[in-house]
Length: 230
Image (cartoon, rainbow, N blue to C red; front, top):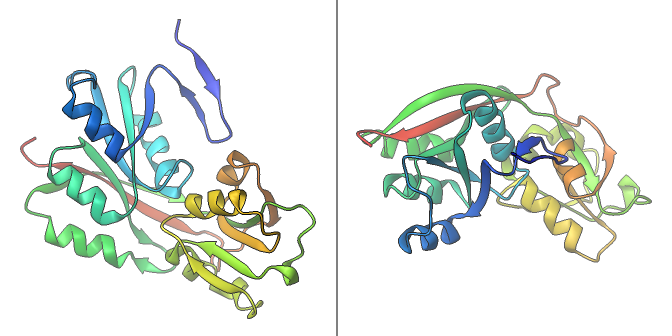
C-alpha cells in the first residue's frame, strides 16, 4: 500500500517522490544505484526544499505526473541547473523567467539564450507569489530587526515595505528557503527573512507581516525545460 504523508508544503506520496541534492544524485547515478531511467524522471530546481522554484515544481508534478517515481534535484544556482540538464544529469529543469512586477529574470534569460540550441520549453505556467516577513522569535518587533535575508529578486518585489526600515541590513541569499533555514539555525534574535508562508510553516518560523509585496497580484512565470533529442 502506498504511503501518503502530509507536510506543511503539500500532500505527497513518499513512494513516488525522492528529494536529492545534485551531487548526491550524480554520485548514485554513476554507481548505478539510481532506478532505471525508463521508470523515473529527475527534475532540477533552485534552492533547498520550500523555495518558490520547489513549490512551482510540486505544482507542476501534481498536475502532470501519475504513478511515476520523481527525483527532485536541488541546485545552488541557475548556472548549475543549466549545466546539469545540458550534460544529461537530469531529465527536466524548472526555472522562473518572468515576474509581473519586476519583469524578466535576467540571469535565466541570458542562460536560455546561450543554451537555446539544445533546450526547448516543455511547459510555461504561472505561480502566485505571496511574500511575508518571518523570524525565529515570536517577540521580535519590526524596529528591532537588524539584518534581513532573501533572494535579490524578492527584495525587488518587496522594496516599498523594506524602505520603511532603512536601518535594516540587506543580505542576499541563493533562495528564500535558504534564507529561512539560515535564520532558523542562527542564534541571533535580530534576524528576519522574506519568503512564502508555506515554507515559513515548514521551518517552524513565525510570521511578523503577511503579504508585503509591492504588487498584490504578484505572479511569476516558470518554465519547464527539456533537452532536445533526449
